Picture 1: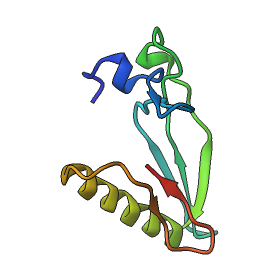
Picture 2 (picture 1 turned 180 degrees about the vertical axis):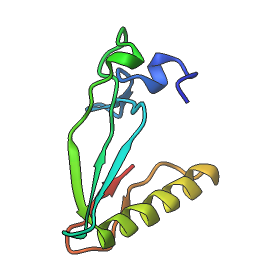
Picture 3 (picture 1 turned 45 degrees about the vertical axis):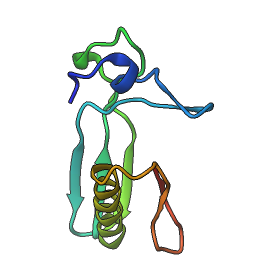
Length: 102
């Protein structure tokens, strides 16, 4: 995944005129069965010279199992669009609090 050039995968590439990309270097998922929550963290590179070992750990994002399922489904739809060579269009989650995924 990180075999791509920095322009595309490592954080400085501009998507549109105002959205910067910060490539993730992995992910960490933890479960909290007692509370019924999942925590997801995405370490990322924030600049061109940053080494993988120095990746920013990212913030933990907490969600309920149903939100995780919706995220999984939205990611699956986005991958299908990507693989189907469709133009990049937002994928909206169908919840009371929609998430915008490009």
